[in-house]
Image (cartoon, rainbow, N blue to C red; front, side):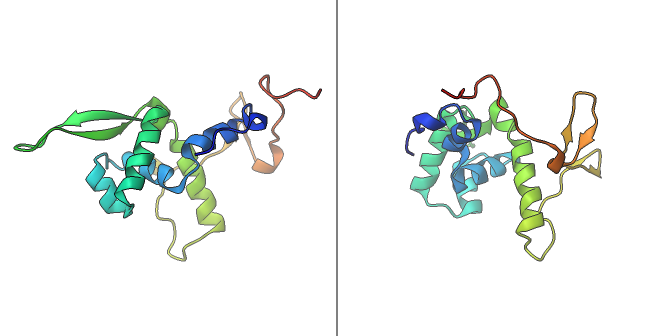
Length: 152
């Protein structure tokens, strides 16, 4: 992956895409959320080439999204599985947002493949202010934060 363009180093989106911007990366994270943490299980489920999977797993480990943990099946050699870290688990709303967008704007014709729930009830993502008031996406704007590049 190419290094971050200096003009993008302050951009949170550009920095994030350096790690999770490739198709297989987020699909691997999705599989880890579903409990598939072993190389063979991930490869079987995704149908990804082993060299690509090896590369993406290494990048996700290097970025602190996954961590390697040893395991050993009875009578087998020790192997490693790939478990979500705090940074990896924090991607759940990102995946939920992509799912929500995809169901709305790229529908399969079969209905949602995933529905997020809490306590057995469906949940959705929302913009909430500090008082817990929900705002529609078209009401919300992004303003420069302290890390933004200031005009010269």
